[in-house]
Image 1 (tube, each protein chain N blue to C red):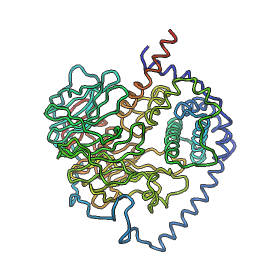
Image 2: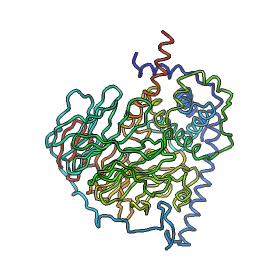
Image 3: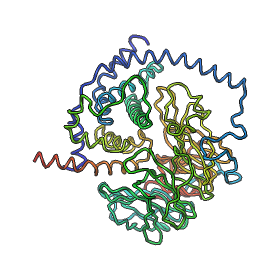
Amino acid sequence: MNDEQLLRDRLNEVVVPPMGSILDRAVADGERRVRRRRTVTASAAAVVSLGLLVGVPTLLPGDRDPGGASPVNRDIPVAAAPSTAPAGLTCRTAGALEKPKNAEDVVVAATDPTGRYAVGNGSKGQDFVPFLWTDGKPERVPYPEASGEMIDVNSAGVAVGRGSDGGSGPDTFFRYADRKIVELRMPAGEWTTHGWPQINTAGDVLATIQPQGSSEGRGAYIVLWPAGSVEPRKLPLPSNATSDIVSDNGIVAGVLRNREGREGYDTEDMQSLPEGTAEDGTLAYVWDLAGKGRRLETPAGWSSAGYGISSDGAWVTGGLWNDAPGDPRSPETGLWNVGTGKLVAKIAISDIGSAVSTAGQVLTQAGGVYGTDGERIAVDGDTLIRGMTDTNRFIDEKLRIWQC
Amino acid sequence: MRPERVREFVDFVSGRLPRLHRTAYLLCGDRHLAEDIVQSTLTALFVQWKRNTTIENADGYLQRILVRRYLDERRRRWFGVLLGDRLPDTPARPQAAVEERDALMTALRTLPNKQRAAIVLRYYDDLSVEQTAELLRCSPSTVKSQCSRGLIALREVLQTEMRVQS
């Protein structure tokens, strides 16, 4: 019997302690909650009205931005004017990546902005089998341990991945270039990986690392391995920030968690959240490498997170969640203009943006592509896309290439 | 809420309650916390039930809420916030002796929260990789990765039990 089936059987055999009268309590609590919501809604409306009358500016000179380690600086370097893709793209096939031999379920994880390189992973049992494609030709990345997972690649063909020895040892990040794997060192102490790092055009790799034995980013901090270096550099970002994406011009996009750091928790937005809001709500943020931060627009009562940044640092995509009590918290996809901090598109598709092109096209985790207007770009009907370039070129789940 | 709507709610939930409770217990490994999570999940559904005459995919809604409550609850504990009127668990919980007898539960507790959630959703609730990814707000490859690592961590316990049985 294999491990998976054995585990299925055993999970069904676990002796579960008896439960109390949960259903009765839930109904009673639900009745109370419904009554309380009416009251809270009325109170919240009153607070909003008062705020409008007083007209307090959202940011005063000398205010400290909760997302940054230093006073607010609106001069984070960004592209002057983000470009947008033309509407009504039509797409045609433009070949396919060659399918690697002796690997199952090979899926592309990312492409570089030009489309010349792609990385992806097959599987062998429970382990990843990593690949790099150059001009459509695959090569197996010779990761020496049990499982190597390719994550991203830049336009020079330098890739980044995460490796595991398959045992109890911590995961590590590695760069792959010129057919050589170089492990990215961790700081002194016992650290492990957290998240999936991007690599920018120069070759900088940014990641969040966390103490071994920790999870969910507790005790984590953000480090940068500068191009060509394997030594980590701790960035002066807030202790409650997590990120693994950095643009070519040094903009870091990510998440500010509001619970651990008081600065983030006391922001104006969070104070205006309605009762029952997730107290660990997150906010999408951008910082420069010196730690100067800017909050990306998040509707009141919502949490947000930045998961992808365009190579020129002009766009960020990620997720938005309604924190209202009782809401199923299905995600929506967000697209932000970094220069203005404005939420440009909020797409209600129960999906999360994971990558964004310099033209503001968003690739979601589920494989959809959306324009800055929030409309889906039908690359080929409902074909799921796994890789996106800055040149309207896409790679689908069957390794086919599409030029739009 | 009208009595017939409450009755509909109770009918709908009753049949699903044991499975929900087991999922919650496998996720958190704590009798009281599992009850809290399930109760909170049902309360959320009740509020929605009040608002809507029909809830599209109510089973999926229940699962989403349950997982979010579990993850939210874990975070609250990490940040040292005591919510409500419950005292935090102490090492000498009354049910601890029963729980500790199950090596699998003990091993499950050592997994990071999302890894444990991925394992439970995939191998107890029989959700697909994609469904699990949606619930955990991550990519399918992340789910595969989490399950892979979780299985490796649990393998020793499972294989030991196999050897003992044979």
